[in-house]
Image (tube, rainbow, N blue to C red; front, side, top):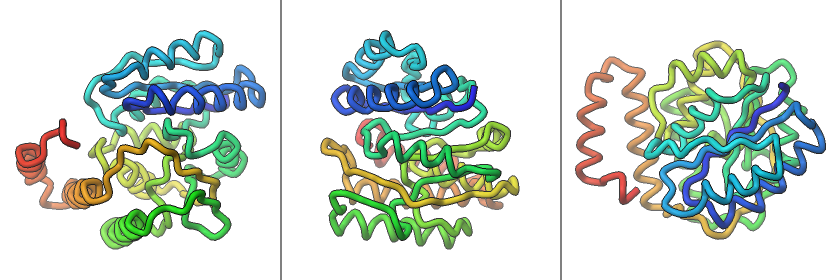
Length: 256
């Protein structure tokens, strides 16, 4: 099989159906049985898994994994990638912000690179509507931290569309240290450590209504996640479990 696209979904019963139908129609027409979509519901309290299975009944290329429970987006991506059968394995957000044509651009441009990622900040990218100043500021601060702490000279580690060659992704998954907010950074850092090349290309991205992201709360989560991840790959890694427990006590999962 040529291509597997993993779609982690947390409480997306409204935004997931149009996205799934668009992706299933586009990729089945373009690649036929050589492409598959793997939806992984994550700790859903709504009908996300139900609507995904209803759509899957009309598209044989679409699979829905059993709800894995409280594993976070990273854990859902990991489970989907482990079940994927494609030579190329990628993932994309369930909200539909990345249109199928933009994801297919990753497939067309991966060439011999081990990984290709979409960027909303490179010259030539198209973002609509323009994000609020607070989100743009938070994104650029996060990107600066990633560059300083991990040496990843990329403009956008957090865009939801990424594609890997299977032979690159498998060792990356085996070495992941986190599955939380810093999951994307960890994947790319591991890719770099393994010596695989990372290509970044401009993308088309449409901001979708219904986002659950809260800038201040997300910013704090991301800051803590980056520091924790940096410690995982340092002599201070023995402190990580203690910090994680402290964060959980102050800011339990249910509030995230």
